[in-house]
Length: 354
Image (cartoon, rainbow, N blue to C red; front, side):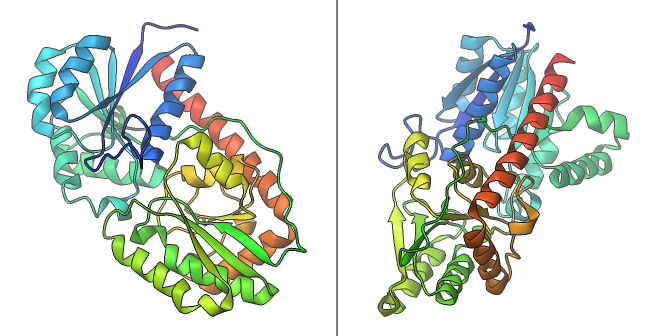
């Protein structure tokens, strides 16, 4: 059912934007895809949604004037709170929402996060949308303590708007057991909480256990939050073990359609990360029909095939189970992802349609 609601998603172009390494609008792939998936879903259910990319804070007034939305969702923390002293009077009817995409362990690396969170809430016209239940609980607590809100008041200012993912799934892949190499995709931006190095150790242990060579596939060209040492150690690990036949395979960043095709070439996907809210990379692998070894941090991943991200032995064990039952892994993960996605659509619809 169509409504008068018009939601404008505004994202910030990366400071290190390079057309060769990012999508045409200059966003990190995960954040861009996350917003575009939600916007498409809202439009399909009759809630008008648009999406734009801003170079900086000074673009916002022009974009809001252009679209005249009822709601503006700022994706992630990049608009300095003092900017709203200018924007709110210019657009008094707009409801502003800052949408958080991280759990607290990752947010701890953003030096401005706690100050900006408190400052955002000082504006009655601004609400905070959180995409993970634990983070929601923590930010609601922060708002209650700082401003003395009741639970009813805080629920109106800090609420849950989870990720959505489009439901197009390839048929689950099998794994050719006769070949001597297993291709394992451990994709995504390289940073410490993504745990690439320990996952590489787990993958090599797995290869040694089953007598296969491992091609360990990663994305290079983007490192974040002190990720450079991780890259150096990944390269050194596979260089030191070169005689074993295990290889590090590096892929450039690519548009999502091309990335899905890269995923299709993998035997197993890995996302044994320390902190997650949704994990779009894992969803891309699963939607491509590839089995996934994740952790309980991924809210939709299959617990049976999950690993302890602190243990390379646990990762190796989970890889062995996945290697033996790849289609079951993929089928269950696709089922869980579909269920999560349907629930997300209902939450967004209820929030904006009432």
